[in-house]
Image 1 (cartoon, rainbow, N blue to C red):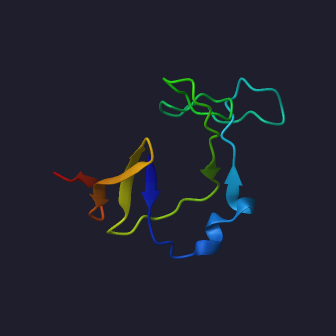
Image 2 (cartoon, rainbow, N blue to C red):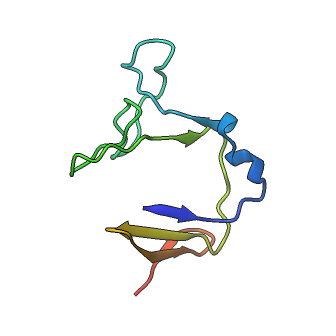
Image 3 (cartoon, one colour):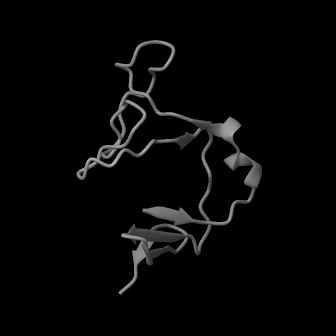
Length: 94
């Protein structure tokens, strides 16, 4: 899955604002995050059902999604928009 959106402040997407969300069980100086939802694992890589290794990143600061942001599903190279943000929630496309 990917999210396509327009950023009010594109500089917020630079590498200096990214971090790896390591869990509190990781040795210092990495640990910190207490909990997050699946597929978060706390080890810097997302959980996977098909043995695919996917690094995980998060932004240090909140980004406000604007109306019109798109949620994409990419399977076997096929990119499909499956939902559009209405300003409050993502609405699935029929």
